[in-house]
Length: 134
Image 1 (spheres, helix red, strand yellow):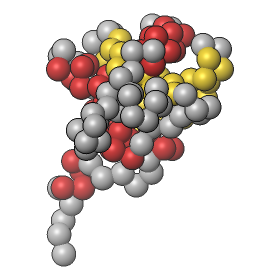
Image 2 (spheres, one colour):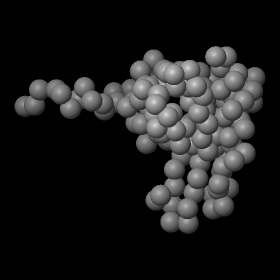
Image 3 (tube, one colour):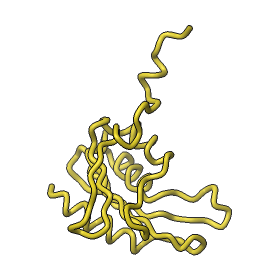
Image 4 (cartoon, one colour):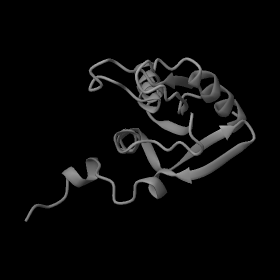
């Protein structure tokens, strides 16, 4: 799997975003541990609360299709260097290794690369639920 394939899919998914209120398009593409890629776009509703980000759409599609974890994710948006929100970062922690690569894509050949640990240090995960209490 070439990361450029992830970038192309994320850019394509950005065009499918349903954003009649914010007009801010976001596309994402997740690589599952099963080797498949899953695209997602942000989808808004008039009441905003049920709105879902592109990253979570892609991740949930992967998991619901049988992937056990996410190996990488590419994200693109209308603004240069569109980053995942805090909720999406927390979902990534649930389904990915801290070293998972997150690609912030502006164009197919213009991107930045981060690890999940870099974007969400000191995250809360299953291991925290198992820590000794006071």
